[in-house]
Image (cartoon, rainbow, N blue to C red):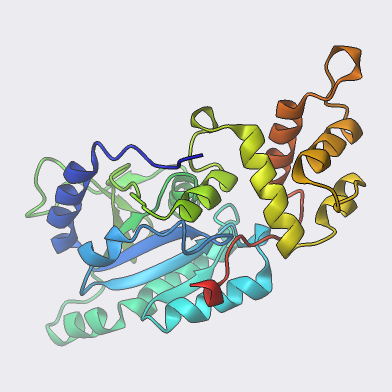
Length: 282
């Protein structure tokens, strides 16, 4: 399979961010903790140069905790303020707010010296599809996201959302999509569902996933489905289909249905804590 997002609106997206970035104190970037490299848009690093950077490794409850810690150190060495989170849990958001304050400490101190006290930090949140950006905003701000109106210098009626007394978020939905050349990045993104399944061959994708999981997390499929992992990938997928009764008429295995079941089990965390990439592979 060939993986590529259609980048038709990327030029406009870059232009929009270049304009908005001047208004921002800090960039909050969400990545998927299971693949913090592949789910990170490389264009943001260029566009956000000189800004404070907060990197949230979301869905950490689904990733391999030991690997996530390595990723946190990897990005902290590059100057990011990092935190592993689960955006659905509101009790973790206090730590996010503290991290934002830490990332903007120099800006807050400059404001204090100029006599500007308690001015909210202005943030922009970015992230590729399916990393949980909307869930994070809803959890952080609550259901009633208060619109604080246009700010001086903000053109075309852009709106700010007051997340709390200390942070305001520039609402710029859907402006960032990754464009990648490395097909292994596309494969990993397809595993987590960031590329629409309708564009992919799910059976082939499931076979690639089986190859990965057997190499990196041996016995996972055996423990989950009670199947042997020693055969070729198509045989393993067929065995999963037999166990889970993914059958057509005449008891023939519905391989496509079995592929969908396997991928859904992974995406929903039912296969356990799995990370798809490691810093030492970069």
